[in-house]
Image 1 (cartoon, rainbow, N blue to C red):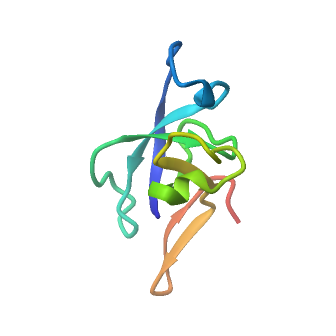
Image 2 (cartoon, rainbow, N blue to C red):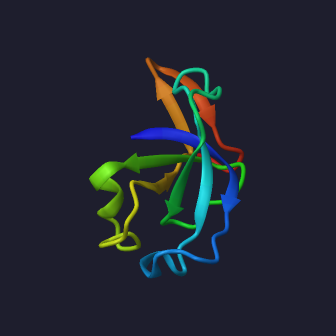
Amino acid sequence: MVIGRVVGSVVATSKDERLMGKKMLVVQPLDLETVEPDGKPLVSIDTIGSGTGEVVMVVGGSSARQTNTTKDTPVDSAIVAIIDHIDIHGKRTFESRGGS
């Protein structure tokens, strides 16, 4: 699993029929401690209703096909959570504006 910030979306009129109705978002991976960009952006299927600017948890590979939204779908990246906050070694490294 990785965390990332939703930075955009992808629209594809022609696609595998199993992707019809699935929201595809561009996610910029982030470093857990600094919450700064870390790596190349990727396209993930949104399974939870996330949106631009939110920090999310992303799963890849076969785990990405284990949600109700992505079961039997040709994907290898899925957004499975919106992050409220991250604590590492007793220090809060990230807190969403609406987080607890």
